[in-house]
Every structure is written in structure tokens, then in C-alpha cells.
Length: 307
Image (tube, rainbow, N blue to C red; front, side, top):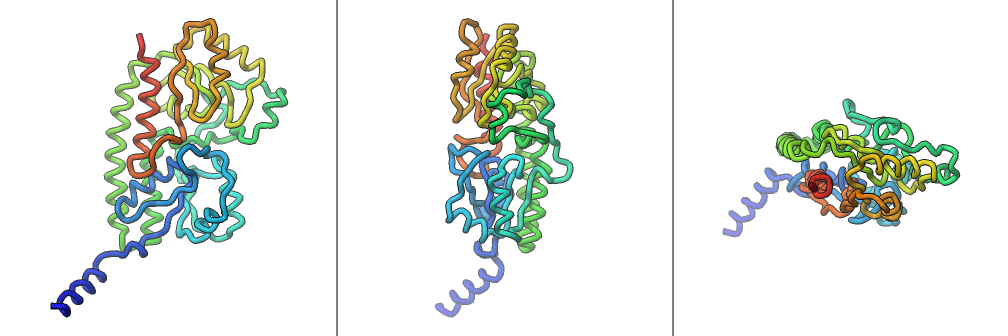
């Protein structure tokens, strides 16, 4: 009986991939972690450098996190346009395999000078001191659900290259995720259709992908980038836009809402709940990416849909 049991265990070991054989994947924050989790499913959870509530633009890595990066079989991250701190670390580590999602061929990329960029205070000293002014490519490309299928395929292909034994599983998982996200996208589009013509103001210029994809009307943003103080001239112009017909002003998770409160003072414009474009309040895992999109839609609808 013991001999039979030993044979069965040995046979299972030769047919079932061990968890240790699955690549160790490290991601930067929720959007990448959620997409990788969809492709890996129960083969193993990807690690994430930023904990819940952390800002994707900035992080001081602990020695243990740097060591985890050095041991990683693959680092999947948005790209240096979003997380320059990670770019510097990876450059110092040398040959760590990585997949930059913004560099995946076919990805829809938006220029910061496009819709939603409202800053006109180039001479303001506060503008020049901002550490995270978005220049060139807008890094918030995960907020365009049209990029997700390309990224899921790229993640599956890279994992299959590192782990051929599970290549079929990665491809199947990616296909199921694409179908589910298409349904989520259609649901969100249907719900937001009723508020497409209702202008709103956001905290910083992070929503161009989302608003363009769903046809929403962003009247302006308080700041053009993360950690970037707006100038007086810009705030005066934005105040005029608010008075001219903005329906709602939306603070942002982890940001001081004081500027938006000043813009709303003496007007009938509503202040909505905080938007969370980076998923700071979203739990990691395979539900993270659709949850991030749904929470944005829910927050917008709660305010824009009134009346």
C-alpha cells in the first residue's frame, strides 16, 4: 500500500507543474498586478511593490523590495513614464527580464497635450518644481480598456516563454479575461452614456483615456500632474469653466481637496466622491482591474447622474 501511494505521488509530480516552476513575477501597482493575476490565475499570485494606498508615481524601495526585484523572473510594470523610481532601480540591477506595458506594440497612447490638459501657467515657479509633471506620453493608459486585451496577450506570451509547460493555461486565461473585460466595458459604456454631455472637473490630468473611451466631458483639471501645484491664472480660468456649466468636481484619493472646494465656493456645482485612478483602495488579485474601472464609473455616476 505504501509502495502504491509512493508511485501515485511520483506520477502526480511528473504531470502537475510545481508552484516553484511558475515564474516569480513582480509588478509595480494595482493595474499591472491585476492584469497579471488574470493571466496567472491559480498558477501563482504576482507580487506587487506598492501596497494599498501608495502612490504609483513615487516610492522609496526597501532593501527587501530591491532584493525581490533582483530575484524576479519577470517584472511587469506600466513603464518609466509612470514610475521613474522603478526604472532607476531596474537599471541598477542589470539584466532583470521586464515587460513595460506602455511599450507593447499597438497600445493606444495619449499625448499629455491632448484633451484634459488645461494648464497654461508655464511661467509659474511652482509648475517648474513639480517632480511628476506628465510630459510627452500620458502614462495612465490602463484607463483605456481597449489596451487591456493587448496587454493580456503580451503578459501571456512572456509567461509562456518563461514557462512553456503552462503556455496553454496562460493563453486560455488571457482569452477568458478578455471576454470578461469586454462585457465589463460594455456594461460601463451603457451606464455612462446618460452622463456623456455633463461637464466635470478632476483633480489632475489623469482621465483622458477614460473620458475619450467613454465619450465623457472633462471640463478641466486642477493640476496637470502628480505633486504639481496649479498657478493662480490656471485656477482663475478653471473657476470660469466651473461657473460656465460644470456639473461636478471630483477630488482624488490621496490628494488634498482644498483646491476643488475653493472652486466650488459660491456655486451650485456638486463635489463628488474621490476618484481612484490608480486603484489605491482596490484589493490586489484577478478582480482588481475590472473593479478599478467599475469604481471610477460608479463614482462619476453618483454625482453626474443626480437630477
